[in-house]
Each structure stands twice: as structure tokens, then as C-alpha cells.
Image (cartoon, rainbow, N blue to C red; front, side):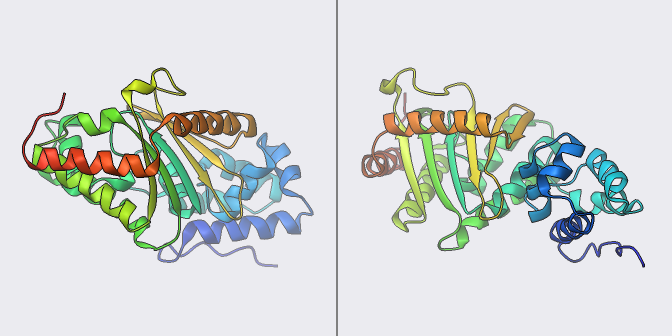
Length: 280
């Protein structure tokens, strides 16, 4: 019997690869947990590969070919499914984000990428890479704004974000850029597209004040948690770790202003920036 055909890069490689994995696993008579045990990963990890939520890394492709007897199919095709314009540490999180039905996010310093405007994103990338060519900065900005189009869908994903007050007070770019960025966030709230809260300085030592947290939920896979630092990030489906991050997010949002109060504050700060008034 002929083996599976190599994937067409013009189609949806990750979805096709996941479907082939599910077919090969079931043909071998293995459950997701059985296959996961042979790869030293969880059954939910296998489920995320099959649903296309997570990308298939070369080391897992090699083991899958060995365990499932697929003649190198996954090794040949994992490269097609892994192509991304994002850094390796972030690419998988972006791909998961695009498939999530619900996202919860706390950002301690900046407006999150999904909510950024071109001017705000450009100022950030220029500050991070001050000597980069204009073309590279423009490409990075384009990628970030493309991510934000995820919110063009009127209902999915549900996004519940908590901004630290720092994100409002720290000027990124010019006052005009900040006014535009905060008005964009407010507009998304008015459209009832996102739920937004602000964690004030007066809240004190609440939850995780060191790094941001992004929690992603799916209709056909276990939830994921993503924690990011400068030039690095960690995506996990470990149930106890995800539960710990969920608790942290709950503590943060419980200590934040209500959505109504947060909107009033965001619009007030945006108006001040629009008038060129400084913020402490």
C-alpha cells in the first residue's frame, strides 16, 4: 500500500500534517496517550499536533516516523509546516493564538501585540533594533498588524486583557502615537470585541509583576500558557503549570479596575496625550 503523499505547501500544511498524524496513529491502534508515552510527551501534546495547534518539531517528526512506521513522511514535511516569519521562540505561540477560541492576557509594561497600532509597533521595533534597516522594521510591523486582524472576526477569539498602568503611562513614540494606540484599544472595547481592565499602581504586589502571561483555550485541544521575556518565551500545556498561571491571571484581574472604570481611564489618558499633556 502506498505511503502518505508529501504535503502541498500552498495548502494548510499544519492541518494536513495533523490529519496524517491522526490517521497514522489510529492505524497503529494507539491512543493519544499511548503515542505520547512513546515520545515522552503528554497525550494532550499529541492532540495539539493533530489539531494543528502546535507545530511539529524535527525531533518529534523523527520519533513519530520511527514509532508509526511512516517512512520518513513526518521528517520530510515538518519543515513545510514550520515556516514562519516570527522568531522560533514566538512562532508556535502565534500559531496557537490564531487557533484559540479564547485568550486571556496580562501585560506588565506594554500594550499587547494583538492590540497595537502601526505607529506604536514601529516605535517599539525601532527601539529594540535601532540600527535595523527600514525594510526589516516595516516587515516586523506588518507581521504584528497582521496578527491583530485576528480580531476582525466579530466573535472569535474572546480576548480578556489586563493592562498594567505602566502601559498607559510609559510613552512609546510620540504623544500622538500614544493617543492613537489608546483610542484603538478603547474602540475595540466599545465594539464589545474585547474585555479590558487596567491594573493600577495602587494595587501593589499582585500576581505576576515580572513577566506577561497569555492563556489560550481551544475547542479541540488542551489549554496552553505562554510566558515571554526579552528574546525568549516558553509555551506549555502542563496542566499544573497552566493552572498556576490561571490563578495568577485571576488574582491580577480581581485586583484591577472594572472594565467600565478601565475604559474611562484609557479614554482620559488618550485625551491627555492628544492634547500633548505629559504623564508621570
